[in-house]
Length: 148
Image: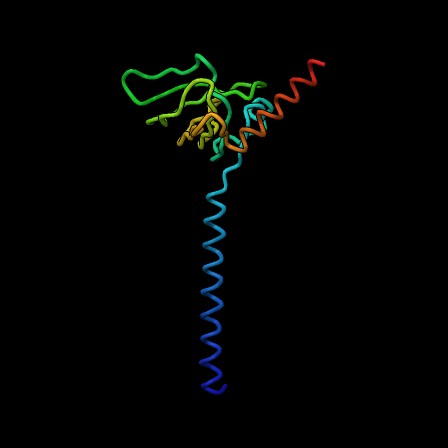
């Protein structure tokens, strides 16, 4: 093979390897950042994978917040007005976290409790995370259809 062709072939192989490596890293990063959303009704139906990073959301049940006096542990329940899920969180909650407010948490479903690593609260009275709004709307429709 001619030395000039050999040099071109080497550069092409290096470029292909670099592009393949970059594509692989991008796909791995996207896969690691994909968290599926589940409403409390999905937890009750058994659709939630155990010990896998997920997102869950709903309204904080009034009277369900239990704060530890010796640590930053907080336990509360969320609902979509169809089902209720216990949540456990260790850390400082957002300032807007309150009873009867919408939240979305990221964490894992472990032993019948959603163990949250991060909690996001709504930022005004009109906003609700899109996934939580859809879940609450579906639960309200299902509740109306069972009443009729």
